[in-house]
Each structure stands twice: as C-alpha cells, then as structure tokens.
Image 1: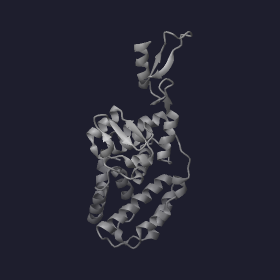
Image 2 (image 1 turned 90 degrees about the vertical axis):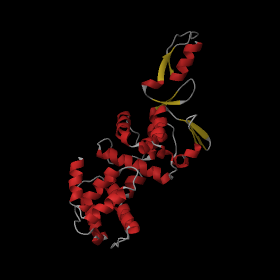
Image 3 (image 1 turned 45 degrees about the vertical axis):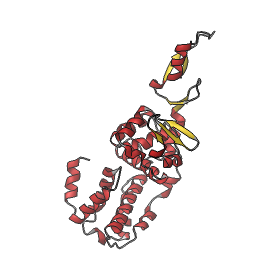
Image 4 (image 1 turned 135 degrees about the vertical axis):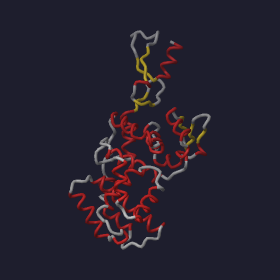
Length: 283
C-alpha cells in the first residue's frame, strides 16, 4: 500500500488513537508496516473511542473477516496485532478497557499454526524472501542463520555479541562453531542490533512476521512461515559435498566440476568450490 494512502487513513483517526498507534509501533523492531495496516483496518470499523470497544464487538469483527474469505493465518496475525496493541495501551498508557486483551487469544485458529506439517520453500521463494528482506537486517539474519547454518530456536536464543568472534567471523555455540559467510558478516557490520540477545519466542515471532509479510507480497500462501519450514527447506536444498562432507546451498557459485588425473574413468565430479580448488592444486 502506498505511503500516501496510509497517511490519509492515519489522518482520519482520532488524535488519541493515532498517538497510541505510533507509540506502539515505535517499540517494534520489524514488521511495522504490516502491523499498521492490520490495526488501521480495525480502527476504521470502530470509529469511536477505542477504549469503549468490548470483546463481543471484536469477536464479531474477526468472524466476519473469516466469512469474507480472509486466510486463517492472516486472521491469526491480525488478532495477534490487535491483542498486543490493546495490551500495550492498557499497560503503558493506563487506558481502561472493557475487556481483558488476553481474551483475544481465544479467537485465534490454533491448528493453522501449530499442527500443520513443514512446507519446504521453493528456490524462487527463497530468492523472493531474500529480496523482500533487504530492508530488514534482523529478519534476514534470523532467516539465514536457520537456513544456511541450521540453527535451532534454542541456538538462535543463545546468539549474542559475547559468543561472536569478529576476527574469525565465528559464533561459538554450545557443541559447535559456525563460520559465517560474507553476507551475514556485512549484516552484522551494518547493524550490530542483530547480535542483541533474544529469546526463542522472539525468533519464532520473527519468522511469523516474515511469513505475514511474504503473504502480503504474494510470495507465500496463507500458511505463512515457521522455523520448521526453513529447516525443511535446508534439508531439501542444501547438498553435501562428497569430498569434504560439508553442506552447501544448491546454487552454482558453491559447486564446480573437477577431474582427477589418476581417475581411470576420466569422470567429471561435482564437488564444492573449496574442494575444487584443492583438486586443481594437487591433481
């Protein structure tokens, strides 16, 4: 949606709602545009003082959205945005509400998020998500660390500046070390906020927000994105070099064809770039 349209819609809100919305968004590190669009759609229905809204009205609103064909995952995202907004203005600004915001969680369609099987991304979707995340260093870092390096949510929750060696470009996790590529290194140089320690739940939320944005961009369907989707993508799309046994993404810059002078069958073998360079040196 164009900035001009968003600004026009913001201008139609009451001063209080506009202030609370902008203040709430200022606390978010990623996904501000999606949150703003989702909440604006709700505020435009309830044009009076939002502190007078009750739970039954919001329940009716979300039921109508579902009847109109809004995807379940998109609806869950909208409910989550709404719940967190009302929790924020109640806690931070002392706004007296007619309902407990935590009640909104009962409206979420839980089986959409928790019970579906993992869906590996297509290579075209990986490329589109990377393009989409060019303006989101934190989201890109979270995506690449799970996809390229197989970080579990527990490992992601352990990442901090304290375990990163800038000289060696290395994260020292419990049980293993990760040497990052130049793309991740540049993200860290550009935005050291990616090294601020975060919880496993925060990373889960990052993936959900990436998925929500990808749905709006027409990249993914209503299932959105979860960590297990990225892990399944890794299992499908990363190949193991038969020479060094390391895993590399299935893209041309990582692989070369080599011949060994002593091979009686004179075959050309597919190996990783590093092993290919060794083969050239040693025959």
